[in-house]
Length: 557
Image 1 (tube, rainbow, N blue to C red):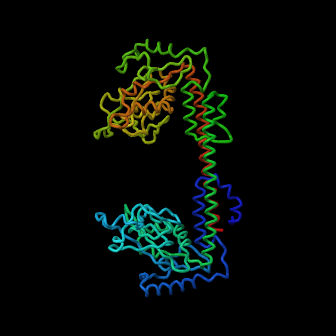
Image 2: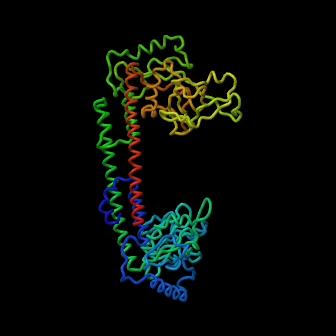
Image 3: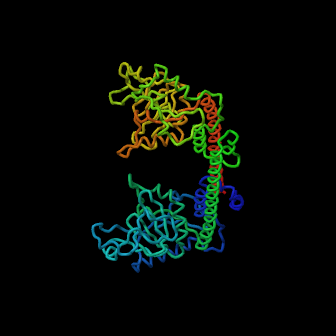
């Protein structure tokens, strides 16, 4: 694919993730390889330019304007890529005067706040017009320290840490600290071409850095870094073309941002329309061919309408939940007083502010579940003969369990009988101080025999197994998560759910027949969401492969 063909199809890449950034990198790479604009036989060869630069450099050294910094010719095995015949390889130290700065003594206030711009590496932001600084220095600081006085138009390069390779062109006179190297290009070398070259070589500069926690690329390595020098006339054409292409990338970014803004507005409107009339006939607001709602938002919306009784129609023939609850209370095994707490008559007083359909009731977790903590992990619980699998925080997510990393506990005699998980047990993460972990909840289905749980995972065993899936929906909905997070706040500012707090959680309970219909509908919709997520992931992967293929083809064109 040629560049002209690519530009004809430029708008096709507007929806590709990170397309603009990938194209910026590509255009810079093509620019410094001589593949972005055509060479002209009328241009003076770069070798002639380099000879003039060498003469200018010797003159400036004799006049003590610049310091001597000798560089060797670039060997054939150092050349990172091929360049046109009219270009030549040299080194950064041969095409400009380079120097860094320093940091004055922090204890001497006379050296600071003097109005002289003093730049540190973190202030370089790849701009072509950098001015101002977080701190300034005095003239006394410059006279008493080792500073290169950079002029407007000089090119700056960051040398330290995570900022290695950041560049800028100065819009004013400035000095820098020791983590920034400045360059005044010699006549015939455009500062903007040098700027684009350094941008294109960022990964190579980073690879050349040394050091552990604070890697750096030294001035010695910078001045010896290979530089592809085009004729001056071609430098001007390259800079003009790069400007044109970067403007196209800006347009691509704007198109994508405008599309994302519009898409987000459509999604909000679609969810709002569904929430206003959340019935099966309006599900097309959530699953529509003209827009795609993020899977996480879809799942959340489905759960929220399900736990309010708005996902499936009510049936007046369903037995109201209060009659089921009375039967549960009359069972000697499930009566008042279990979990050390009597049944609360009016849990709706501190229930979430949700109107419930006819036949639904509010109950506390303690009314319908036995809540228990898990086994305390200690160093002496080394798996030996009496070792059994256990679930920890890392195994419990919202709505699912990760059983690939299940470990084992050494149990004391009798512990297995008291702690063994049973199918339909709900497992809730207590949080242990972490806000994001609060209330993650999943249901155990007996996947592993004789499995237990640690103390940071609280077990809720249903007094009637049939209600467990519906209560799981509530606990994993944004309403349920909000209830648990507010309940988990402690006086110390940390977050933690205790067994006692979980027992007090108020949950909605629908008639059993309606619960079955809700669970079936949620399962059906979640299957659609899972497939949508697979399709979206595949679509993004395809788009990335497309742009990568285009980039690779253009590089070799």
